[in-house]
Image (cartoon, rainbow, N blue to C red; front, side, top):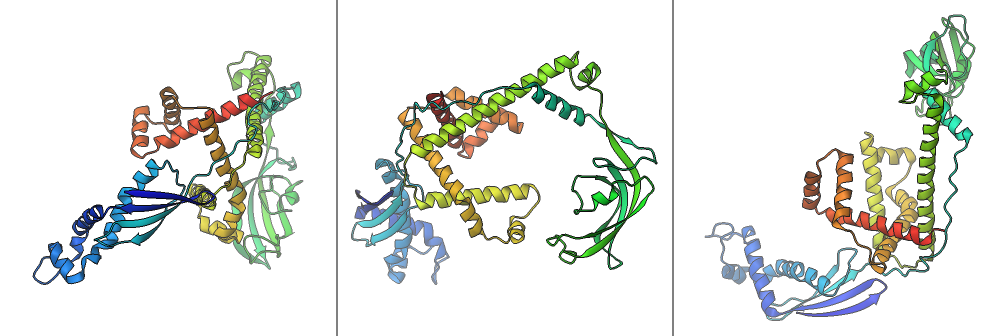
Length: 429
């Protein structure tokens, strides 16, 4: 087999492949075996017509197309490995010569993975954010914890409703005196000031008391989801059944014992400070890693093939569709609501897709230049962590990943993380 490789343009190569005539003849024989089930002639059962009879009736050319497919499938992977090429998409195949008495010749035009040129990627001395937690930060965290433990207490009948109170209401909405769909509720718990209802509704309930009947008059928003109500004058008949208010627990040693294994309020504050410091350290580390990555990306150069960007956009769209599906929503409905097409979504995603592809190429290049590899123990640790997240047994998960050909993807995740670890260490001040 002869192979001639020509570089046509940036990231595109052309392979001219000549397969010996004997190998083409073998492929024709395989094509007959594979396709004979499709043929029937008088006097023969379907699939049992001898090859020589088919060739006499239709010509040997009836096997050419399948024979060509067989030869390309057999030879292309071997050539790619021998030429050490890294395609990023399916090849464009053109048959140049197909004659049973001549060598089989085809041309494969291939878009290959581009070479990324690293600029300065070490020694940039990027500073990590200062980690400090103030007393005010601790107090804010403590108050958030206190608020989470608050109880709703029913108020006396003579107490008026205020913002942040919860009112239990019955309501009926009418437009021009006629009730409209979706405008009624019974014993509905509404937090005043939450913005759960249309603007102006909650404000008109402030100052009311238990047992009051309030007539709420307002203009519906111009872009209201129910088109028949948009911009219209409506009226709600609202009965105040009950008013509740948050009661905060006292911040004392008993509170500390209630929320955890802390003997004193001071001990609880110490824990909150440690947690805030851990969070601040993690956020500072993540921010540093991102800053380092951005700096190295900015100095790297690469000509990204359009197909890689297109494939990344398609992957991002699939992820978006899956997120909608997990919430029980249809992606098509979102497109209709947002008045967008798939092309619009793709155009919006393009800058991020380009960055994602460049990041992947960058991290791959760093692993090669710095000889970064993944040890078996690191793979085991990664799979163990995944098994813990998904509540599966480690060996079983590894078996599934191996069966589905996903171990290489797991290895790449670890490789990229190690590459970013290296870059962060090499560029930290």
